[in-house]
Image 1 (cartoon, helix red, strand yellow):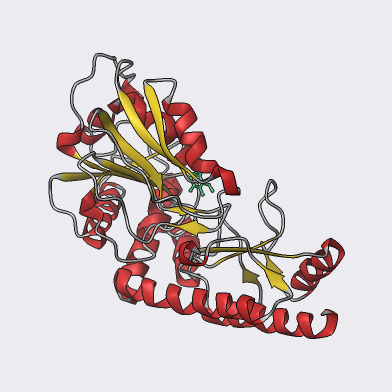
Image 2 (spheres, rainbow, N blue to C red):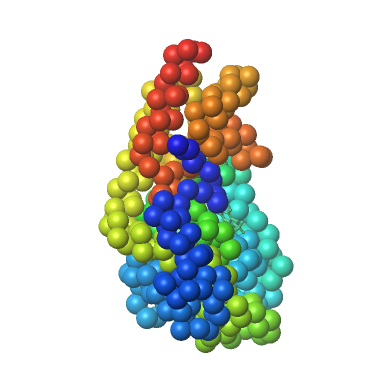
Length: 355
Ligand SMILES: Cc1ncc(COP(=O)(O)O)c(C=O)c1O
């Protein structure tokens, strides 16, 4: 058995993989693969509609919001958001809360004026800077709800009159949050919501006002809304895997249950880190991500030995992000508690043998 701690693409529920395998051969007994049916066919249209509906249901949003399934990953949203919302003479506020947030701010500066209102770059993004003010001239405030690379997470969101936008790529559907505080949410599917290839965008319709800029058709949220996310050929297989994953989340008990599990797993791991001085983390305690725990062993040779032992024990994806190094354990929705118990046991054993 493998313990899959990959940061994304990452572990998926086994039942979702089994259902996907079946649908790839014969979708719902129609004698065709899900990959072989037209996206406007009576077989696929209900898939798209149900997936969009479950997103709204899990987020408890009303009809003032629209859900889109788009392509291009969260990285495309870094530019599609400002392209749709920010004219050249307007400004937007960005939280420079990690490598992804800083990339989002950089892209936005191609379309309008960017005000970086809070940054934690001074300490290598090891905390969330919550001490800031936002001027009313800003069209929106952008933040990254979970910083996948640095292992920090927002646990309360800024109270502001300025519309909130969040990149929730790495913690979407892992906890109950007031989604209706946000005017736009986006997330790549490949962590908590399925396979790579599709990105969910949830947007409050009245937030999309006319701009001076002409937005290219394929980039225009309003045109995607009018077309029900079927303006062009969507990634049908990725949308179907997202639907299966969304159904699984719902069946398991929804976001309340995902949050209970996530708290249980992350508490176990952080308690283990804190109980073993051998393992260290720079991440501020109050901002520790429940999705991605980032820590290290001071002696690099020993750290490499630990990573090797992880591999020998079937634990994959434990090496830190290429620019950060160290160790990263990702604990997304589909990761079993047993996997976290297994790595905690290995950590204890390793510290006892090498400390
Ligand atoms: C928070 C966050 N935003 C954006 C991205 C980039 O996503 P994509 O590869 O889907 O463009 C990632 C990827 O891991 C991420 O974790």
